[in-house]
Amino acid sequence: MRTFFDFAPEEAARVPNYGYCGVLSPLLLNVCLNELDCMMDNKILEFFRPSESDSIWKYSINDGCHNPSWPEFVPSSGKEKTRKMEYIRFAGHFLTGIRGPREDAAAIRKEIIEFCERKCAIRLDNSKVEIEHITRGIQFLDHIICRRVIHPTLRFTSNGGHIVSEKGVGTFLSVTASLQQCIRQFRRLAFVKGDRDPEPLPCTPMLYSGQAHTNAQMNKLLETMADWYRYADNRKKIVGFCAYVIRSSLAKLYAARYRLESRAKVYKIASRNLSRPLRESSNNSAPEYSDLLRLGLVDAIEGVQFSHMSLIPSCDYTPFPRSWVPDHEKLLHEYIRLQDAKFFCELNKSVKRQGLCLPQDEISKIVLDYKILGFWSDRFHNDKQAENAS
Image (cartoon, rainbow, N blue to C red):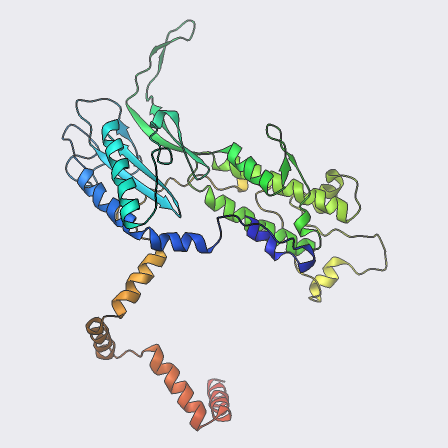
């Protein structure tokens, strides 16, 4: 989040401290921990033991017999449960979920520690790789993963409203964004002060930027945060809080910059999303903002996003397919395949057989035409085509 302040002018730069979460470190960790990812993928297949009494996974891990609308629905009781393991990693943070006894979790933890020390030269201990039960809530990347019991039918008595039957038939995996972690990040960036009732502070790093530039950069920050909390159940609440903090911080900044007394006056002039222009003085001889915008002398001011709860997108419950691969990894695989001479020759033959042209051929033809005929020949050809078309 701190990198967004780099868009401010040089006068406002204060040598920001990025800490350990720079842009390069996740890429380097993806390279260094690639062997760990491959090892965990093999462990997932080895650990999986289906149970015929389980209505979700009966035969294999890819049988697809479970309900896609409830991808994480698992029975809460039964003779025997299917043993299953999941693994996710983001940069240097990884989480392993095991559906089975605690002894299996301890054995997997021991294997991970030994593998990291032997293959990746990373020394971990038991205190860093903790084992927690899902009922207590597991914190991972500013999110809390917990279990929620499903009660499809609740029966009440006619008088008093007491619950007669409350039998849980299954559980959901619930991913909730941590509000305390969000407040802690805002406090680290000097956006708010206080814990229980945080008060927004002026966004001083954008002090010397214009209103259009400031709103645009803060919108990029809000879009990033909305995407970060994409799979959180309380996405609307957490993104609405972030939008409130940023909007209030900008309102305090504009109140100080344009010599207004309070945020209320800023909202009255610039509207709730701060999209209307603010002026430093009330000189009548100054041109109107609409005239300057029409002449191209100023940038258009976009309003701060998510000013209303209805504008915030809901949680994305779309289940990931088992064979999902990131886009950048698909491109890397295609690039590796092109390094194979046999595959490249077959691809080239297929292109020629279908009568298609390679981009390299088009570029070579353009370069050759400009070298031999020159620019004016190409311009004359285009003019001739225009005359024929007319």
